[in-house]
Amino acid sequence: DHIRHLVNEAELVDRLSKLGFIEIFPDEFSYAEEMQIFNQAEMIIGVFGSGMANMIFCQKRAKVLILQPDSCNWRGLSFPMKFVELTY
Image (cartoon, rainbow, N blue to C red; front, side):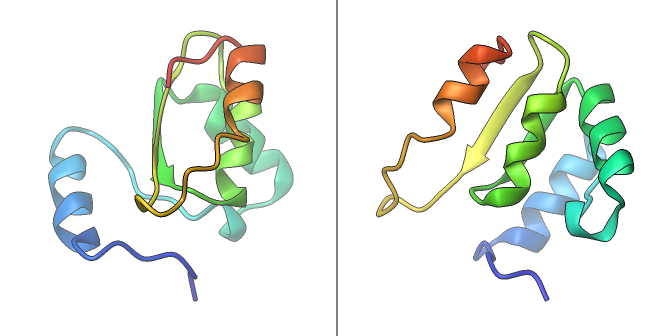
């Protein structure tokens, strides 16, 4: 079971799939597969959480959109994004 849910998750996934995005759950893949998936991605969209730490395997200049509630104002993932030159 995936802990973090969005109220309109089904609608968002449907709209993004029409734009060519593929929904994945990193915890369903081996570590090597996770690295490869994130390394090949041009853009990552995901809910704030540990699965988004895989963005460190993205190519430079990949785009990252992290969804988080207004009540969560933690910017801890901004350092790794800057380190690997990701746009967020």
